[in-house]
Length: 159
Image 1: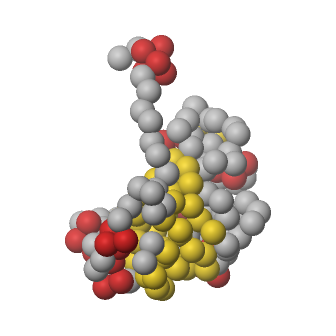
Image 2: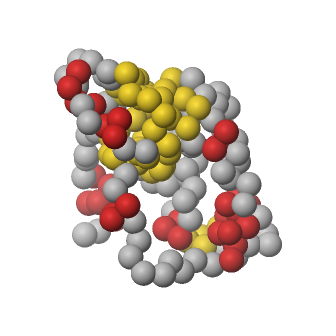
Image 3: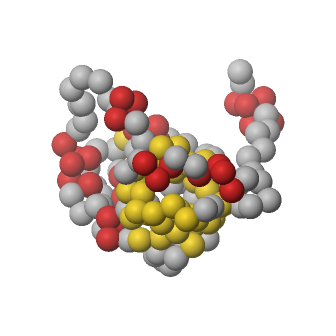
């Protein structure tokens, strides 16, 4: 598929809720200290949508980086740090992606109807939430995980 036809394809996503509370400003580190709520849309979801969710300790949340305005399509130093190698956009987890999609694993603290209280969600107040999935350990990586040293340095203060 050519770049032109790929860019003309459209996918419409509807937020199922929004992040409320927690961090107001975009800052890269210390997300594990943040507690926020995900308020799900009662016009889209029935109250029973969260039934059984409280049995899980963690969630995977898919969201839209709604305040990101930059798009990167090639390679750059992660966080503009020249001590780390230049890597392509698909080898980085930056918000400056073409579709501005984020995925975060966070701790589920409470379920109250269509309101989820979470800790460690790396999304700011007002962030549109596209989906919420319970974390199953079996969906985690199988076998040994390999990653470059710079990612350990980057993540040392992230959470």
